[in-house]
Image 1 (cartoon, rainbow over the protein chains, first blue to last red):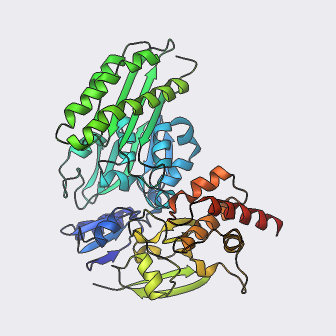
Image 2: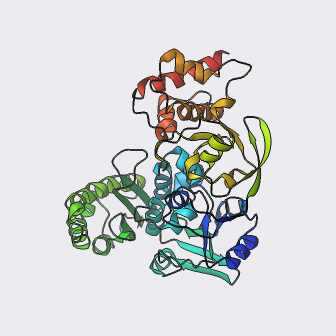
Image 3: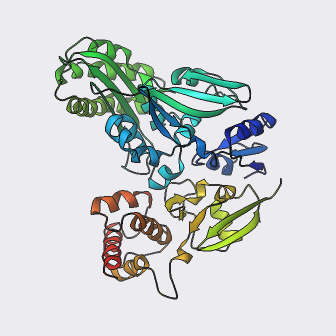
Length: 294
Length: 158
């Protein structure tokens, strides 16, 4: 690991000040499960590291006016242990409960997961499926943007919109109501200590008669950022939600994955088939959650 | 590069020390504090050999910077035995024969200890989930699981 100066501020304004002072060559460490490895392998060598783990004010899960707010430094373990998330936001519960290992879940934070913006980020896929937004804070002020705009942004390291003097402070999304079901399925080589091969996320809302009024379908590890299955969503919207109707989308999932991943022939033959298995699992779970409406 | 001062509680003892900020926690524990029970396996957070109990939770120290331990309370394997008497988890690993080469053992025992500190009577499934971040390439996992159950029983009777 190359040399660097180390700061561990205790408040957000203090952190923003240090980031602004050193924005020419600075990196933020939260849980460290990605960043410390990158430092150790000398993939990055910033002059300054800002440790944000002491910003206890960014560890929270709050539900206010139908919006779920999660502080960036909330660990995967804390999210998975929160009864509200387990009961009402199944997609995020599963993504956080199955990521890495118990040790990694105790360290890794949801803000770190989003800021790292890995192709295989399980939190990235789950929160994108929920149309979440992020809050970026700096001495210049606060910016709020949709996750997909965040990923499309070209900030200081081109992974996302984050500028070098900014700190991702919060992610928030609309709280799913009792007519909405959400689910995540991780396909990986093992149950634990494995990076996702496909992370499927799906959320669906129905009316009293079980007709789909809104749906969101995303596939992690199938594109640089979670792949949206737009055509499949169109096929479900306005239709009575049944297993047969949901399974009509399977050929679309197959074709979408084949089309998007043509340049990666070594994985596409497996993924175009397995994406259907992943979503079949999700369909069953969502229908189960949506009883008695469907 | 400026050295930093950190203070932490390690195996019950308060210390304050200078450390180079570009040291990982695993290296700080092994090299500076000579706590060599902390093993580095993969160095990527994927094997659990470098696990310690950090503020009551198991974490992999290869994914942390030494500076992040400031203010923390850490338990390593060296901190388990009391007055020359092995901890119940250590004793059970020996009694059951859950150790072969031994490289994964410190991490295994600390993960099990952290589980039992929070949940003294875990189910088999809870043990499996709790231990899922520690890999063993020698014995397989059946005896390790049995050892954790055995330790839970012994602590209950003690």
